[in-house]
Amino acid sequence: MIKRSDDHRDAGPPPERMPRWVKIMLVVVGILALAVVAHQFIGGGQHGPNRHVPAGGLGDVPRLEWRG
Amino acid sequence: MKLPPAGRRAALTTHVLSSLGWFGAVIVFLVFAIAGMRGRDQSTIRAAYVAMDLSMRYAIVPLAFAALITGLVSSLGTAWGLFRHYWVLVKFLLIVVATVVLLLQLTPIGYLADVAVGTGIAPGQLTEARLSLVVHASGGLVVLLVATVLAVYKPRGMTAHGRRHTKAAATQRAAAGQT
Image 1 (cartoon, each protein chain N blue to C red):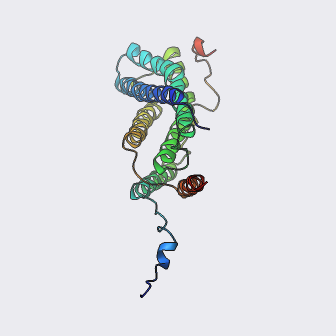
Image 2 (cartoon, rainbow over the protein chains, first blue to last red):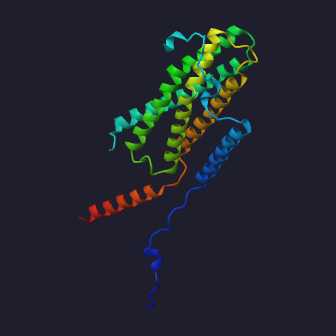
Image 3 (spheres, rainbow over the protein chains, first blue to last red):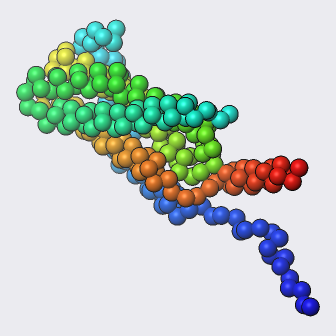
């Protein structure tokens, strides 16, 4: 009786690759990151939440009382 | 550590409530942001930015933290785990990024509310800052929508850590069955 070689079965199933939807999401996140970097260069300034707030603070503008 | 069934259901219920509450609150925030951007009369603009500041501090940020914490409890306390399935890991990262961006927006929103109450905001004034809130709120909605879709559809795909864990658990079960 001829014994077939089943060595490839001993190694178990091939390792599962990263799903396509994860790769697509990584590409989208990469494009968004590039867009933010491009916006920094084109806009000529940093992209940050405090870019709209004056460096010297609020000056004479009264603060809302619930924030103290 | 695995949660008992009652704990799992409580964590999941709180997670669903806080996540959907967060989504709904951001929709309302976006409405205020557009009203503040397009409003022509001072009382509308003032009301919009004050409402945005209040809703951000007392609704959106607490809901975001509630969603993050209950999501962590639900994943770590069940067989799903946090790092075993791509959809859980990706959803967690999306929520972390959304929460960080949210916290970074507190200062400009507070600033706009202060200016609106103090000197008032003329229609053409602080346009970039006001537009930024509309853009960030819209982006936040997209991120929350993607996170919700991931939670509902649970797309297949195990991480390398998840595969190792599953294999180890199967080996352990087989060994226990032989004894």
